[in-house]
Picture 1 (cartoon, rainbow, N blue to C red):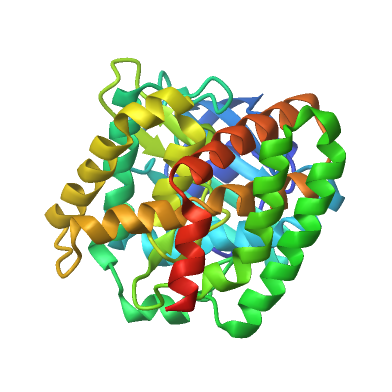
Picture 2: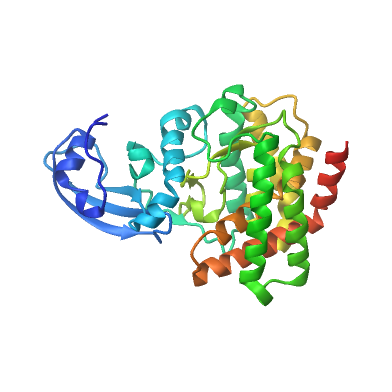
Length: 357
C-alpha cells in the first residue's frame, strides 16, 4: 500500500491523482460530495471515472477526520482505534464490513483516511426511530461474528488499538469517577426532560460502574463499543447488515455490546417481547463460531449485566460533546430505553450481588 503518500487533510485533497495511486489504476475524473453528519469525522462519496476499463466500483466512500481542528484533536484517539481495527483486527473476525481499499494514519491521528466500498443503496439505521425485530436479529448475528472467532483470545489483553482496554482496578476507579461527572452533567443539561425514575437509575448506575467493570474478568473479547443503529447499514431487502464506525473499540465482557444494542435500538415493548429469542440467537451464533464452555444461562446473565453499557456510553458521549437538537433527542431516547431495561432486568441488583460474591 502507498503508505508514504501524503494523507488528504480536506476534501480538496481527494484528487484523481491521489486515488490513482491508492487504487493502482488510472482515475481520470472524480466528483466529491459530503455525506453523513460529520460530528466526529467527515465522510464523502466519491464518483470516479477511470482511464481504462477496470473491475473497480464507480463510487467509493472516503472518511477523513473532522474538519474542525478542535474536534479533530479531541477524537484523534478514535481515528487511531479505527485504523488499528482495520489494520490488525478486521481480517481476524467475521463481522460484516465494507471492503477497504486504503486506511492510513499520521501525526498521531491528526491525519487519517479510510477509503472503502460505497454500500448504497443500503440505508443507515435510525437510532431514534429504532429497528424492528428482523433487523435486530441481523445485528445480533453480526455481533457474534465480532465476538466469537476470537472469544477470550489473550492477545486482546495487549491490543494497543483499544480506546478502553480491559479494566484493571486503577482504570475502573478512574472511569467510575469520570462516569459520575458525566452523569451529573447529563442530568443537569437534560433537566426536566428526563424523568425522575430515569434520573434515579442513572445516578445509581454511575455509582456502580467501578465495581461493574471488574466483574466476570475471565470472559472478554474485542467490543465495537458503540454498537447501535446509527453505525449500521441495512440493505433495502432487509437481508444483510454492514457495521461501520470502529472508533470506540474496547476490550471487555462481550455482552456489553449486545445489551447496548438491544437496550437502545428496540422500542421497549418490542425488547420485552423479543429479547429472549434475540439473546438466544446471539448465543447460537457464538456456538457456530466455535465458542464453548459458555452456557445459555451465563449468556442471559451477561446480557442483564451488560445493560450498564447504555448509561455509561451515552452519558460520556453526551456530556463531553457539543449540544445539538438531534443529539439531545437521541440521548433522551437511548437513556429512556436503557434505564427502563436496567429496571426491568434488575441489572443493578445483579451487579451488587456479583460484586459481593
